[in-house]
Image (tube, rainbow, N blue to C red; front, side):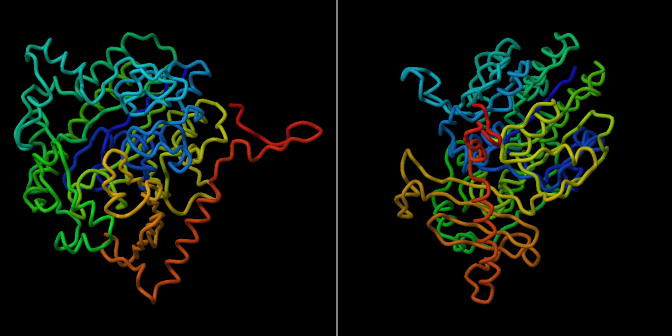
Length: 499
């Protein structure tokens, strides 16, 4: 019997692994997993924020096809998820954590509670432990552990350099890991499919001792950005407005606004973030050890990825919105237990979230639907280079604001025009806005995306080439579920997705 363990984390940057040479992050357990599997060095999420990115993870669709463009935008029920297809094949995909997939309101009663939250469960998953943003099961766990009636404000409203008011073994990351291991130990050795979805290292950047001090501030690398906030804001109208609007909630209270991101503030934030990563790596190591002790490593496909990255002060930005690669480049490690799998492979080719659903389905021996925009990574896992592989990564961000219309009003745009798409290749990166000026970066001379060449008259041919490549990419990936079928007097020719 075969198993699938699909692990996601939230807001983990692609450069934050010791296996890729980060100067202070230490991830020994993930490094070992990569050494026994494949580490994908140029893996990109399809969109930000969480909901759109995870919709691509679970459906294998680019955002321009699934159209769940914001947290809270419904995911069309006709898009099949990897869990739905696995369930039809006899698996029982279970969830520990969350998926942030908003329910399709069509066919639901207006009073259905699923229409009051963006934190829906992706179709096909059965929740063994649902952990929404209120973290209610964890707070109940803390109460039983003797911490009293605590709120998230009690736990998180404190300086980032101070330890959390709970023991490391009682953190939200430890709690989710413990519940998964309890479930695993309660099973016989038949096949299973589990999705383990951690909220960390997403802010609040508060960690329990000793993880809060796992990284010395003296080791933390400085941010990549223009010399001043004003110079960064001058790059583009969207970026100027984004930096003017700033941040709210915990981030505003404890990190501040873009103008507050001095070297000391960025260092404190990054050190806390790296500590949360170290804690996650520790608990992932517990899972890998348990699988080995149960004799299940040799029949378990392990996929580790993040939904998106984190700006962490780069370009004077926080969180994960916009077009810079720090918000989209994420880690991907896959361990294929098959005897023919390569060990310690380091894959430099561009890979994307849309490739994960085809990979899991092919590994399970299931047909990959025409719905999927991506391609299976199995050839890479088996030491082969697929022919005709992509030469660039493409990702999107939709910045419409249906609640307040801030971008629409300030930029004079209709909601459907509040979007951007990026084509990131080896030599250049091209940022296309639907109704605002484009940007283009020469990555050979400017790897940190500091100087826009789109307005340089001497480089217009390079920009035109990038725009043409992006347009061709977009046209070639229109929905194809019925377009390859033809009704004839002899019946249906070609292939189509049955539903």
